[in-house]
Every structure is written in C-alpha cells, then in structure tokens.
Picture: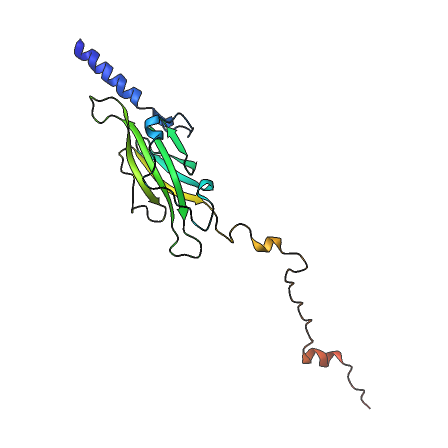
Length: 202
C-alpha cells in the first residue's frame, strides 16, 4: 500500500511539474529576488562617442524553452530584468557596429538566472547560468548552456549619426531634382519625304 501511495505521489508531482503549453506564458515583469537584483555585470558599461546613449538602447532577445519548444521575444531596455517563471534575464546593454564598419555585428551583454536545485536534497535557489556577450551574427562565439532554456540576440535598437532621418524627406520641393524633359521625337527622313507634297508633273 505504501509503495502504491508513493508511486501516485511521484506521478502527481511529475505531472504538476509539467505545465504544458503555457509554461513560458506571456513575458511579464514580476518581483526579482534581491539576491539576483543585487548582482551586476562585472565591468561598468562604457558610453560610445557615437550613437544612442546606453540608457536608451533596446534589445530584442529570443527565449526558447526546450522542454516544450515554446519561443518568445523579450524586449528589454539597458539595465532591465524580466522574470518568466523560474527564469530571469537581465540586460546590461546592447551594441551594434556603426554602418561604416565591417563586418556588421549586433551584440548584447546578458545575464541569465534560473531557480533550481543543485541536488535533490537542496532547496530551490537562484543560480547564475550565464553572464556575457551574445552575438546575433555569430551565435556560436558564446552560448547559453542550459538544459531547458536558450537565449539569443535578435536586435539592438540604436542609431548612429546620419541614421536619424532620411535627408531626402526634408528636401524642399523646389530644391528637389527635376526629371529632365524628354526631347520631342523628330520625324524620320522617310516620313519627312512622304509628308512633303510631290512636285507637279508637266
């Protein structure tokens, strides 16, 4: 009897752990534990002399739950954290190379925390599973190595001088280049000969 009860309890716990389709759910801000909120990136963020200030940059990160194959986008400003269930993603900053530099790169400094047990006997605790730069164009340079979650960079919204507006939008109509007038077609010599009256025969 005890064995059957233990088996039922074990199955009930396993089914409760499988949240199904909505496990990732909608990304929503919830309370970030103080132990995680107090951890910051190792190096201070350095402002670039070009482009959008760090505080105004917005990164779009992809998040995949490998357990149920659900994917969603997280849109975070620099310094913002987002908690989804037992996962916290923190964005320190994001960056992309200026348009005049090659090769183009888009990156974000991300920290990922997961609430899990180190062993079956220990209580749930927050563990930092990743801290570093992720690159959109070269995702294999640095990857989030976790059995359940994957995080990657999709975009970094920032602008550089000259990208703010399209200069053509502000050109006055009078100063805009006008198309050249097409020349009127001249009649071909054979057409001109047939159009002239024939000389009178005597």
